[in-house]
Length: 72
Image (cartoon, rainbow, N blue to C red; front, side, top):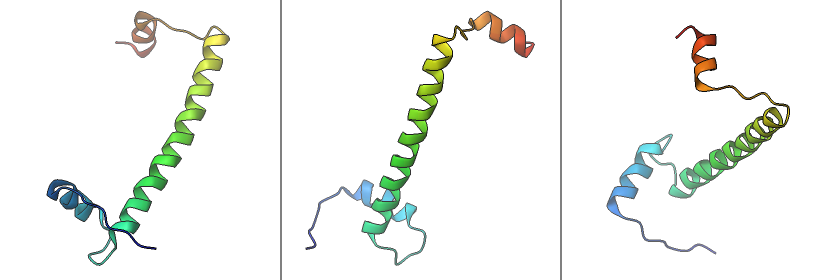
């Protein structure tokens, strides 16, 4: 069952900019955004897990140590 939602003109223009082709539906545009967000969320979870593991293993560097390592 289809439904109607209201969006501002500003959001409509942004959705129009995200269309891959002129006749792409707004539903497809929104699904693409949701899928990209879910993928990013999974990737972010993995990055956080790695960061927590580094912290547990004592792999913590100060700002000065990082600058020195990078030659800044």
